[in-house]
Length: 410
Ligand code: CAP
Ligand code: MG
Image (cartoon, rainbow, N blue to C red):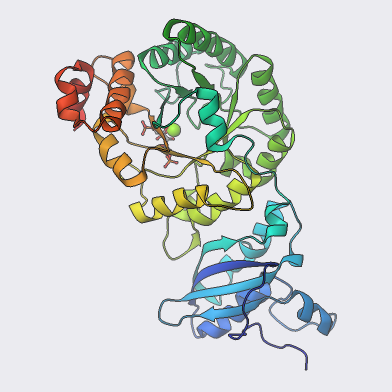
């Protein structure tokens, strides 16, 4: 008897299935069951009507199963045969399970809550080249959080000033300096000039401090240009490339990583909130982060729970855990916390997310009353205090820069 429905509550996913958890709200005049049929069909082999060209074996072999459906919560689970997807091709996977379905009238709202990839698909991607252990090895920092800054103002500085602010950040105690997400190759700060001058300042700061320092230039552009920029970074002794992964897209990101330039890939997620923020519609940052781990980013912004960006603690914790959980030997991705952070927030941040994170402060360093060097010292001081189990107030008694930061922001 050929299958006519995608709903099969007796089905239990097997190891070859890609499993998606959705939140679904049926559209006007339809039921949750009907909405699920439409979602399962449109995201796999079907369309809005039966077609004479199909064959029973297609549904048998490639038809997904809606195997869980909760009318109270709207949570629906769909198991898709792994064969529906092209291995190593994240754009195709999202065009299936995160494509047309969001726009169908049969759903009033639809959110992709989580995604579980089968081993065959996981292994078809590179995964992080460095991951947490690799990055810690480069920076020679064993257990404390890494401290980074974003050069501010976001845009407007010339290459010389950019490099000088970077130098001040490093000598003040930052391990990492990054470009902001919308700084690429503008006339006032050309990419090549910025990278060369800032890497020179990195070398100077390393010499003067005796500590390892890294610079994360933003290579975001069309794919070919992104690769050219990453090659320029590599040729000039840089170790990192920062990519705005949402605006660059899965394809650009995969192409850059496939070049295997031996650079640490820092994933900024600007624009993610266009689809991750609405709790009823879109794609969760959790699912999106899992996909970026497979593709192979080494570091990823996950939120702060305490800063300026929306993102409740339990969601940020879930993303952090997903970046580190065992996954067929795929390396763990370094969680990056950034956005409205200042030294006064460091205890709560580490309390919620632990110390195996990268803490980035832009305004929270360059907005220090005594300037960037003092701001970096205050940021590092806050981390040292927490790692030593000392309250910030006590630590600030003999660390003036931290005291001034707390007076301004906390
Ligand atoms: C932070 C930041 C980051 C955001 C990104 C900014 O600067 O550079 O891009 O943190 O958000 O431009 O806002 P501040 P998320 O430290 O001055 O806030 O990490 O949530 O993707
Ligand atoms: Mg930014």
